[in-house]
Structure formats: structure tokens, C-alpha cells
Image (cartoon, rainbow, N blue to C red; front, side, top):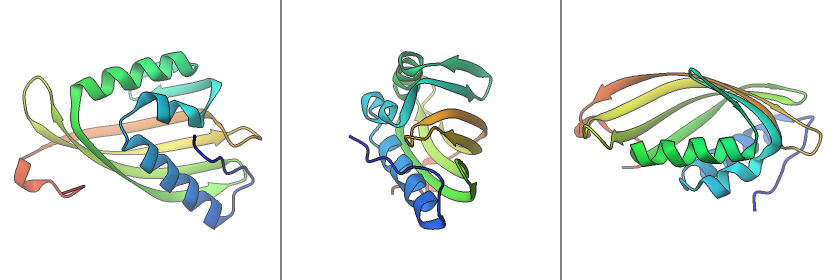
Length: 138
């Protein structure tokens, strides 16, 4: 179970929230990750839009079938009240082609009063890398 930090966020609280998210996502377990989101959480992930824990769980399950050896780093970018913005990068190997990629992006998070994320807005770009260029989780 993910311990929830509740808004309004302090610097220490926001930083801890980002670290907890990084740790959860690096489990690559949709059932762990989904605990941090409200039942009606609204997501934009690149070009996909969906709502609710079942949709989030399904998205993550599909993601980690395709994105092998996934390793993520998140960095607190900004925070205020019930919102946190992060920059991130992660590396993964495409299950179909075997190509290694590094994904760079930004997320904007908005939390409910209980500390569950009820909105996630993510933008990202992928860059092909060689296995020797990996730098996360080596």
C-alpha cells in the first residue's frame, strides 16, 4: 500500500511524493501503481485520454508488455497547493523490435484532499539509443 502524502504540499512533501511515484512505477506492477490514483482519475498520456482505475490498470499492463526492462527517474520541477509538476526520463527495450529507447517528458499532477492523484497530464518524446548508452538502473 502506498502511504499518501496530502496537500497542500511542502517542498519536502512534494519531493517525497515524486520519489514514491518513481518507486511505485519502477515495480512495473499495475496493481501497485494504481493505488496512488483516485477511482475517477483523469489521464492524458501522450495521445491517449482515459478515466478511472480500471483504465489506468489496463494501460499500464499493456505498457509493460511492450516496454521491457523499464527503468524510470523522476525529478520534482514545481509544486503549489495540490499540484506537482515533474520532469522524467525512462529507458526501455521495445518488445517487438529489440530497440532500446529513452523517453523524456513532463507530467502535471493534481491531487484530491486525500492525496490521491485525480488528474495526470503527460507529454513525452522517445529517442532511440544503443544498449551501451543506457544510464538509468544500470
